[in-house]
Image (tube, rainbow, N blue to C red):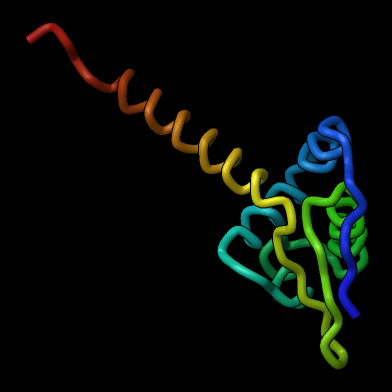
Length: 105
């Protein structure tokens, strides 16, 4: 049984991404679909806390899930979130490397 997110507004998506634990979950899922047990380990929080974070991300439409036997698997549903995070990371790294250069030679 797959769960599909309901369309969420930009403010709901940004609010969902505003927690470090949820952002870690999204970054983990950017590498591909994961089982909840893998996500609990990745974020370093308890099962119930991780599940609550995943619920918030699902309600915002960022991730979706489906149950296979006894396990629930999550994946990124809103691909633009992955692109946005990658863009921010690249911009931060580019700025850091620009600051490190010396133009006085």
